[in-house]
Length: 128
Image (cartoon, rainbow, N blue to C red):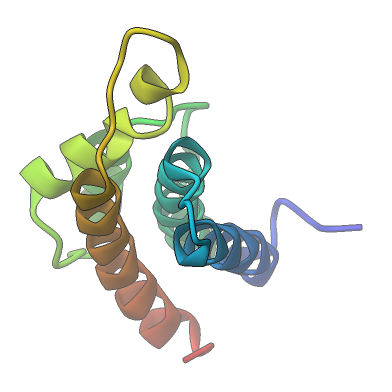
């Protein structure tokens, strides 16, 4: 059972999302919507892991820009562009429903953003 007050448990969940996103993209016919969702979830959970490590409460949100702002208020300067995080946030919700399109390039760009968050968080959490 995982502990929501343990940042490494958040990181473990983020790693599962990272693995699912990458696996979804490696398929002969990539699963773009699932990959996009798990890419965003990876970044979200790593940002929340940083907040937990800093003992900062956070709301239930998928908004990566808001989570990054909370990190900054806690003295954690996540070196990832806000615009890139905003685009990545949209991969969690907006593209999961009919009528919204998603390209391989969209998801690959989101994965790069998530990888930057992941690298930074892992270095601070000591799980690199």
